[in-house]
Length: 225
Ligand code: DX5
Image (cartoon, rainbow, N blue to C red; front, side, top):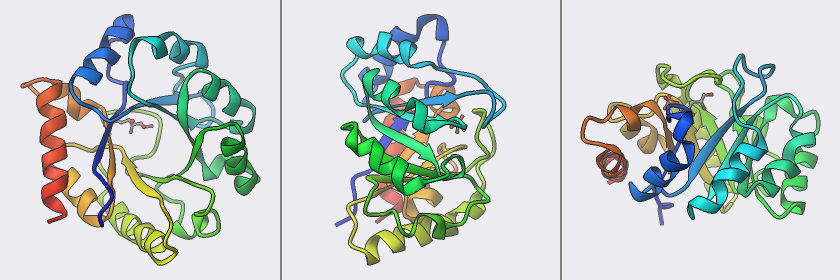
């Protein structure tokens, strides 16, 4: 049974002066959850959302939040983003000295846990933590900014990770993030991704967010037929 296709927008391209309204619009457009790209200016050369920003938005929308921690010290920040209302925490394998322990800590805090891999990081990195995660995020750009080009060579990694999950009979989603839009989503879904993060492509759709969400979902579903 294929895992459900989920559309998780990045709010990076949103109008930050109206962030609450923008998140409400994403919910109205039919997204399955919202991804917060948390950046510390060190792990990636950009700086974004603190936990208090997310906490201020939390009461205004009902869709689940996931925090994509692009930070050098995830262990110190896990609890802050759980308390801010993120039900799923994504940590980068590259930022964790003890990844197994960090993922277990996410769950101890009552959150779902996910591990992200940058483009150069091999799939084997997550081989021994699949029992500790609810999702694996395969970055299809080098993290730090929206609007970058999709790295299609990541599709073989997506397929490799999906096979590891299947072979171990793990209940784990495969998420992709970076350059996902109408011309790339089918390749990612066909490769094995079922959670699709999109930022700029959603906001660029001339027919609006609802059309963009429905179109991406339909393309991903069709790609798996
Ligand atoms: C990179 C960010 C982006 C963002 C999506 O660190 O994680 O991938 O979420 O950006 P787009 O969809 O514009 O590539």
